[in-house]
Structures are given as structure tokens and as C-alpha cells.
Image 1 (cartoon, helix red, strand yellow):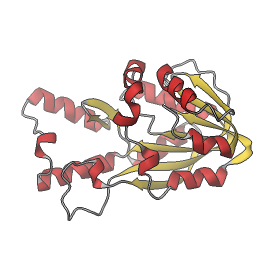
Image 2 (image 1 turned 90 degrees about the vertical axis):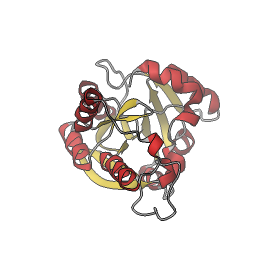
Image 3 (image 1 turned 60 degrees about the vertical axis):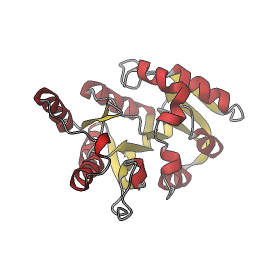
Length: 248
């Protein structure tokens, strides 16, 4: 995503952007952080936004490097969490060619790899690899393409929220949407966001020097996808992918 998009959204980030921390009801991410935390280790929060993970990371690690593309996001985070003195805030674009970020022992990257540009995503993954020390680990969460497809299949079959899922009648628009879906780029609020297949994420990580140790679903309630959820719709739930990977 372009920097201008995140600078614009920063003042209303909490209202507009899905909160993984609050919706991870099983605390899957938090439990992995606790397992690998250490007061002797450094941690990087890649795409920290307004810093929602800082209260969890700061007490658990020696130092936190909070990285984001948006200067406004970082300003909000720094102002909000003045009590956490072991946090260093760095504005950088992980999908650019010039990144000077110190390598850390552990990292998290929570739904930050969203750009529809393949070139920028590849650079983003390369930058992630450069920020994690050998034998270090990182948690990455990303939107699931499988979950998006499931949501759309259910919506079509049971005609849920029909006004929010209008049929495409223009051939040119349909072709554009189809070509985007083939790349895993689907719209959220009319803005293309990259969604990933589980195996795709494993392949991408292996190409930049990571070994995938665990992949889990972070499941959410259906009201995150629909406004009028049928009472019978409970399982399966929509989800994001969470991967724990080790730098080799």
C-alpha cells in the first residue's frame, strides 16, 4: 500500500482498520510471543501502525524496534505509549530498496504485507529476512485467500448482505476483478489488498531463508464479514493465517 494511504488513515486507524489483537480470541499470537520472549532479546514490530502490540512487546523484551511506513502512525504510537522507554520508532518503507534497520532476535508482522504489487511484496519479504537474525523467529499474520473465497461462496449461495456484494455486470470490470483474484488481490472497501494461500506463504518464506515451523488459523466471528449474519452460520469461521517461521 502507498504511504499516502496510511498517512490518510492514521488519525482514524482504530476505527477503520481491523484489530487482530482484539479479535484473536484464543490469544494465539500472544502465546507465541510469550514463548519466545526474553529480557535479553530484541524484537521488531514490522508495520506497527499506531502501536497496539507495544504494551505486550515492551515488557517482554530488552528493546522494541517499531517500524511503520506512516510518520503519523508512529507519532500517535509514540505519544500514546510514552511509558515504554525501550521502544525505538523508525519510519521506513519495507517494500523499498533502502532500509537500514538493525537485525533483531524476534519479530512480528501483523497484517502488514498487503500491497497488491508483486515487486513490492518481494522486496518486503527480503526486508523481513534482513531484519531477523540467524536462528531468530518471526510471527507473520496475513489475510487468507481461502477464507475470502469461502466468505464469497457462502454469500452467493445464501444471498447474505446482497447490497454489499453487488453482481458485476460490466465485462471489463469483471475481467479486471478476475485477473486480480488470480494474483490474490481482492478489494477491501474498494482498495485492493493482497490475500495469501497457506502454501504460497510457505513458498515465499522459504525463498528468503525461513523455515516454516507452524501455521495456524486465527479465527474470527462472522460479523467481521457480514452485517446480517444468519443465526445458523457458526462453523467454519473466517480466518487469517498465522505463521511462525525460523531464519535459517
